[in-house]
Image (cartoon, rainbow, N blue to C red; front, side, top):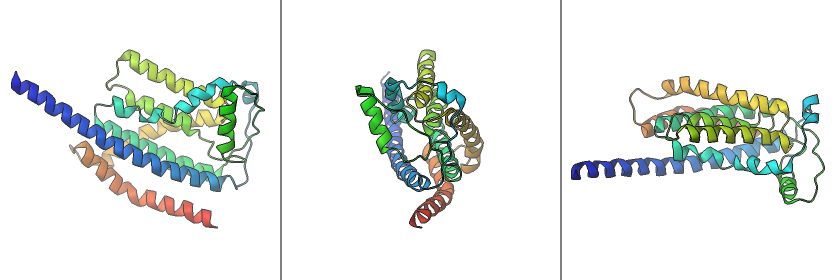
Length: 250
């Protein structure tokens, strides 16, 4: 009994150690992402933009209260840290995010999107939405695909089959749906942004699933797998960052 109790404590201590390690990794990735996202947006906002507002978009009403689920997406990507049991799956999630971002950033340069914003009233939700509009890129950038939508569905895919029961997985699914709808109802994205963002998530997840096996060795520990993956991806990400900041200097 005492030996079993000690083993359980050892397992719990190891799990907590892994979680703390991946929290630090996630915060670093988030910081790097934020810098690159802003840099790409600043540059893309100076490029000629396209308005792809469709007939369907014009029929979708502004619902300012959806700003709350929209803002939820800024913390929703951290949910897998609390949910995953297999840290290889978290590595796969990070790889999906990297693939989704690098490909999306490239498209932001090629096809920057802009569209008119609606007039807002005086409610608290509208004041918050007005602040979001002000800090956004003008006249527009970083829209197609919607990374709000992409991240929401990558999180859902990451959380499936982990520590959550069926009810938990269903809640995560509906949160992803709510975030997807919010991108339309707060008029931060048009229908094309959302549809492409959804496809981007599932395509990035599928590609990451195949690529992870190539980037890491067989039967390695999750930390080792992460280090192997990042070591092989580092030259690509560094080159991309150099290109982005070089473009901004001109």
